[in-house]
Amino acid sequence: MSRYDAFQRYRSKMNCRILGDDAARADSGARRPDGSIAPGGTLVTKRFFSLDTQTYQDGKLPARTKELLGLVASAVLRCDDCIAYHIDQCVKAGVSDEELWEALDVALVVGGSIVIPHLRRGIEFLDQARNHARTTTECRSNRPE
Image (cartoon, rainbow, N blue to C red; front, side, top):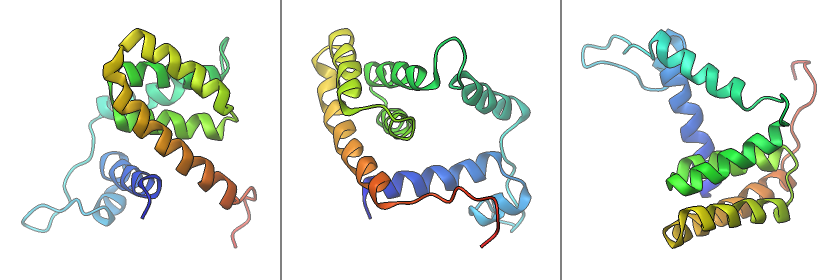
């Protein structure tokens, strides 16, 4: 399994564990030793996730610009999961490789050479995300299949 696929699977599972209802949490493996379903995130947790989602929506800055800003911040903070997430969102938003490279150049200048290992993993993830985007046709219909 590629890092891209593993990342998507893990993120989906854990979001269900954190944000899901009882059934979703149970499906994600959230069981206590006594068999009861472990609790999910608190109201504060859910509000923070919502705030994060709302922050990256179109506003005076387009969503694609906000994703590039998130990518730069993530690289400077050296968070590989965050870098992967923002690269994936940039790909979905139609950001070009050249735009990604310029954003990552800013991260290198701000963060210094310690960003380089994270840049390497980010570019590996980018290649997998681009490959996934080429080989996957997302369903654009609301009709059940």
